[in-house]
Image: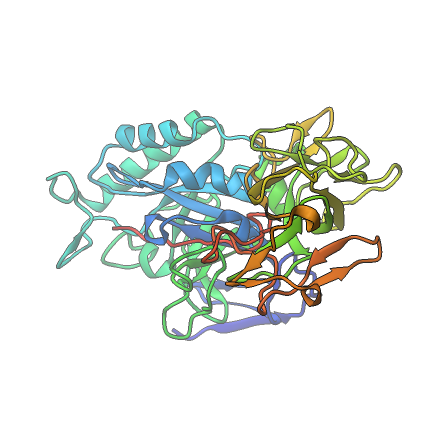
Amino acid sequence: MKTTSLGLILLALTTASCAQDELTFGATAEELTMCHTTVVEGLDVASFQGAIDWAAVHASGREFAIARLGDGTYTDPNFAANWPGIQAAGMIRGAYLYFRPTVSAATQAAAIADAVGVLGDGDLPVTIDVECMCPFSTPGHTCAVGGVGCVTPDESNSILTDLLARVEASTGKTPMIYTGAWFWDGGSYLGGTASFPGNALWVSGYTSGCVTVPTGWSDWQFWQYSDGTCSGCVGGVVPGIESGADVDRNRWNGTLADLRAFASGGATPTPFYGAAYVTQSFPLSSAGTVQIRAGEAATAWIELRNSGTATWDDHTRLATTVPRDHADPFAGGDWLAPNRPAGLTPGLTVAPGGSHRFSWTWSVPPDTAPGLYHEHFGLVEDGAVWFSDPGQGGPADENIEGVIEVLPGVDSGVPPMRDGGPIDDAMVATDDAGLRHVVAVSGDCGCRAAGAHSGNGALFGLFAGLAVLVIRRRRAG
């Protein structure tokens, strides 16, 4: 279809998470194509992606995720984990239902109400995924489910209208519609006869240029621009998703602040605390542990980025978890308290987007029995809230973990062993604080990726389920 150019607009590059090239706005009487440079990157997923490490997804630069909650009468088995997981990682979350025109509006609305209840700050409006309307039917794929024959386009439109009203009433937010001009305006389906301009548009269109906006809308709020695998699509592995590249990519039209305001229903969003992994003092490794002799000590640090909307201050502390606030047996002399390894010094603040390095010392008592000891930490705003509480942005209580391998003390008479051989002085270094710790063992480093273990025990992992995480994808049955 020939497009008549209406002009070329160059926009300043002020992207929140991703930048595109200059935009063109073009249109004819039949179509309107739109794209924007100021965008925020996100994903949408379903059970196809399997279990997802949302902290890793967030650390990769994605700020929102929309998870499938169902398909007609089918409940997505991964939604129960994805819905709270997205929020716990500090991301803006959304949910979508794949619309089936042969299932009553009441049945589909009830499924949505059961899954998400009343939406709050940080929750996007529920999306109704409209890409299956009667009489659409191909071999092996039909929009009719439940043994019901296909209904007419007018009947489909009526059920969709009813569903949108019911969802708005139960969730408290006007639902969005997901569709594409390739479907919405197709003569074999709705043929551009339906119009819902009051519902925000999540448009589908896999193109490297501008996307065509369906009839009835003047612009898009979200754009699904790639599934990561199609010819010419933007691809590449997404950290935290087991299926790697096999996941839908999306963009929000605007800044991150705009997105947060949209997710709060236009009101000023309630500030929340969140953290994302940046780096740590020990490199990740697939083998080896951080080893400390009984009676000695070692230093460690982890750098985290403020991914929330609340500013960190001198009440923002790294704290013991699993269980929360337990007295740590390896608390060093520099700890704020036996349950608080580190925090911000008085007067120091970290605004959203800024980073801070939390540093501490592990001190192993001389009488500690040799073996593996798992240490867990989380962030807390003392006197207010834990970062892992509902409505906050994590990390989860179990995500920051260290595994200490205690070796016999120097005077124990038992030579420490590693990978079949003794540890000698060449493997030990003394830091600026006068603390001795193992720095190299057979080429191993002292950190681990989430869930990884070496052949002789465990790998040390100061990572915030934030660092090395694992994720997945979307589409209907």
